[in-house]
Image (cartoon, rainbow, N blue to C red):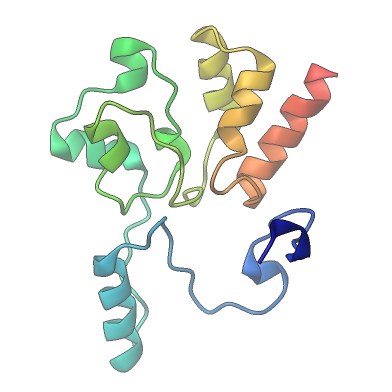
Length: 150
C-alpha cells in the first residue's frame, strides 16, 4: 500500500471527544501496572486507585535530580500525570508528557519557567504539542503561546 491511499484526520483528537470514556489508560505505551489496577478495580466493583501526582514526584522517589533546575533541560514533568516511573528523566531526557496532563497542571507557570530557561515562544509551543498536544490543558497553553507569537 502507498501512503497516498491512506486517509488520515487533519488533527488527532482524544477519543473522549467522540465517545463517553469510563477511564483513560495513560502512557505511550500504557503502564502494565496501571492496566492491572484498572482491570482489578473493574472486576471488584471499585474505582481504580491511581494517585494523582506529577512525574516530578517519581523523579524525587527515584533519586533523580531535577533536570530543569540542575541543567536547564526543558521538562514537562511538573504538569504531567505520574505513572511511567520517570523513565525519560532517568535517562537524562526531559519528560515528553506521554501520560498526559495531571489533574490541575499549571501550564502557564511552566511556560514562564521555560522562558526563563531561554526557550523562544515557538520552542515552548512545541513542548506542549507533543504526545498529548490536544489534551485540553496542553492545547489551551499552546493556543495562548501561538497567539502571543503572532
